[in-house]
Image (cartoon, rainbow, N blue to C red):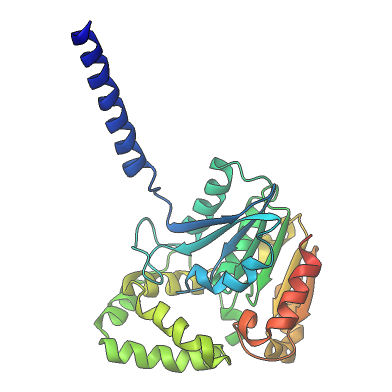
Length: 285
């Protein structure tokens, strides 16, 4: 009897050890993003940050909704210190987010994205129209390149090798100087600007350059007619000067509600915080 009990005990230990191994290996996930799950509620929100940004860009926004929503805050792999993994293309990231929602049975989430994350939210709503209940796009355009050159066209295959090599060849000082100048044009709020620069500094250079190159070659305009859910489009105040061009980019999105911030730059959640939060609370119910 003692021998039988010992065997059973050893067998249970082996099962527990195997279970722990499964959690450690398979529980890490293979998605090209890190996910932070907070809040509680039957309704869900997916937060997608912008280019080279951490999911912490949504901290204040998330607190508005955590009481009644389960919040899934992403940081894309290769950005802001999250290790790079998987295919680095806009389409691959879009597909991975949609698959995550389906695999985890997240029912009709609101998808909120900033900048590149806003474009990802738009793409998901167009390619998977039954997936989201609402979409919020924070300062993103269907085809940013067309704002600089109205005749711009995408390429069937874009080679990002040269861009990646150029960014990897930069010294840390050169890269930081570039990001400091860029962020000054994107964020008026100096309190958070240092943090955003640090996110870039902690990003993988190959992912940084490769995704910038691929995203610049992404045009969502023709597919916007497939979006079924209500879409709130929040745009920075400066874009009001180019309203006809922006209206043209969004002309196929029939469910859009377009609003321009009253002040600040690209990071509307920081630069026009009160206005931004009022728009979200009114739209997300």
